[in-house]
Image (cartoon, rainbow, N blue to C red; front, side):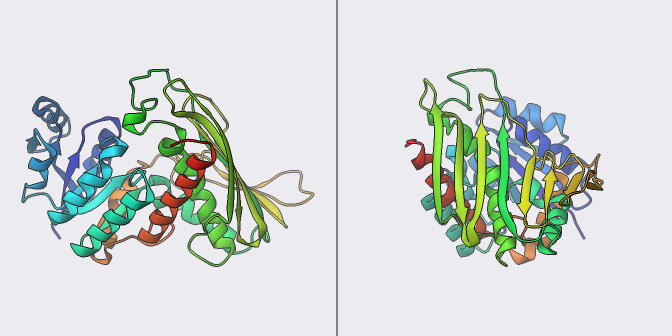
Length: 332
């Protein structure tokens, strides 16, 4: 079969990560790079050996040699260009968060349906086999009944009030940038525990610190899911925190080091045990972004990838949950 021809819309740091995954992909090839600057697109295309460099996003979407578009712009432009890509008949991998809010997420999903194209929100860890592995452990009752979840994605970036992470106009702040990781992990785990692909919060209480630019520099949420499952979630762009996730059950604890980069070995602690059972990482040196590239190819005809990847309903629920969190800390 011929390889899928990819176009990358936006040529920043995250775009380079996907380009490296495409460079080793058996199913896809980078065909075009698009930027608001022709020089930027040309530099990116030269670095990753793409034959086409476009000086506008619209020009990339008009390229008939592009089958799939990866949207790697800042958050506020995701909705517009995802919809325009769908209207152009392009399949879509869109960087997280899919959009800035639930209303726009619903519009993007509607566009994908209307134009019969593939759409996936790019939470790369949800596409990784290690996530499927711990999900199966949970589903098989390895820790009994799930009761509590702890998860965080928080780091300290150099402060730049005009940079993407701290600029309100660019969708800055911890909840939109990395809060989606612990929230999506908790929704996945709680869903498995209740026999569903994902679960939605019954209630959410949040606290956070808004910095000088009005963005959330760090925040926490206490979330209640069905069956009295409680999740303690944290995120931030201006505070370093432990990234280990823990799933606490009636018959043990699953400890997942670095769950969002799938880098460590999973540990299963049983009551009274002095040492955990260790499940070694089966993909310690794999390109993390390769799994989403291959998942797109595998499920292109289905128009969406199955759980634990982000289904369309999962992405819409995720958008609602992040809105709840932002509202709870007073962020508009």
